[in-house]
Image (cartoon, rainbow, N blue to C red; front, side, top):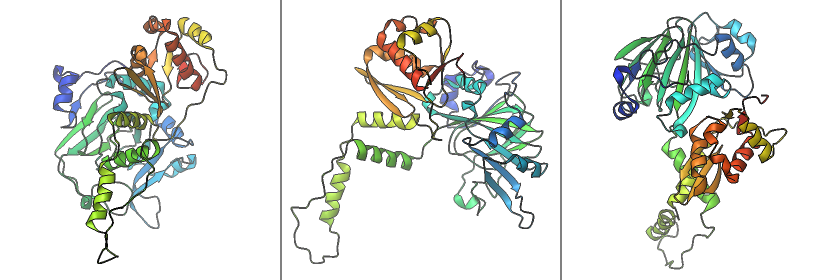
Length: 395
């Protein structure tokens, strides 16, 4: 399941990025031939009942029979008894970040290595009975919609959408009007790519499971405020506003042009460097959006014991609660793991790139790198902290 999928017509990843990525939709029939869902509807319902797993239930008609409501959103965790009360159709159950809990789905992400891994957000699974849907809507991020079970009809529209076009009074961004431009019927293994801003509507033709591989697209205002907070904590001086050139004003209640210019200079002359941006951004994009944290090993290994176990043939894997990324700074390399930053000398660059590029590692791949004590110590520490684990560890 981790093999790269095949684009239609012999298209390669480079052509896809040039012609489709963030530009136009693409249907990929039999992207994963003979695909078999690793999750059943019952297992998805069970996950939606668990604390700590983000889940949502969307009903086209609310459950309150006394006050019928068009479209209702409920947040998990849910009581099992709720599922017995649901109507036979016209609802959808969504569970986020399922790749964190299902290794086969984490492996599925290996098929998307043509996109930088820091851009990948999560895999969400949605279950819908026949005619179930979340309504026509749009997202502001790229998504690959992989059909896992049953058939689903997808309809899209590339028309511009304003806030006024949304159904009022609900938390969901559902379109009140939706004019279909194209439509397709997807079967298991088929996949539809949608760029940001393309309105889409998926309706289950059978009991249906869809895996949504979504990509991080933080709002620019959130990036700016996050960076300002970072600078305030790390770099901005604690000096105060001063105006030694103050002159007598005719109106003491007025904020003068000179005062505004002082403030403008304070803002525009913030001491921002490329290194500030690199250190901040790497931490931001490797943070867990749900706040999940790994658990350290209850019995930490020494470096010698760790290397010995690794060289005996056990596969070393990344915990899916931890995101990895790195930045090459020529003389040094920055490693980001789960929102934390460490800086290493350039001699460790090859090891750190391998660590960030792959989810799973073998001693054969690391044979030459394990000669370095620094590389061994880094792997061992990440293992003891819980960011890496051996395939034979108890979970």
